[in-house]
Image (cartoon, rainbow, N blue to C red; front, side, top):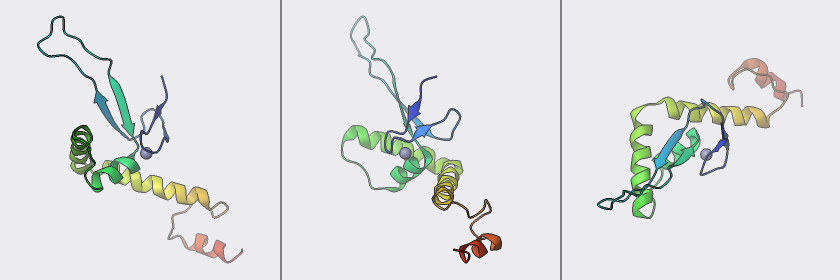
Length: 116
Ligand SMILES: [Zn+2]
């Protein structure tokens, strides 16, 4: 399996991780034999998917078409938004070592701050 990276932030996407894939290929119409380009798989991590979907419309007809597709699927199911939240929380945890594994509102973790 080749490694997939988020097009926007270059974060590596693990197999099976929640993400949005945009498949893109071109083919000729009315030309025989029909010519078909190779297919590109463009991936976005949950954060970038949600950020793009909530952000302003991009420039360019192709970008706009992709943006509308991303908006459709991000808006259709909260799973991606939840994954983006979870990942943001994970980043925060990673930046704060030695504060335990509990959630942000955990009293023991709040206590740990006073030991610094
Ligand atoms: Zn990303």
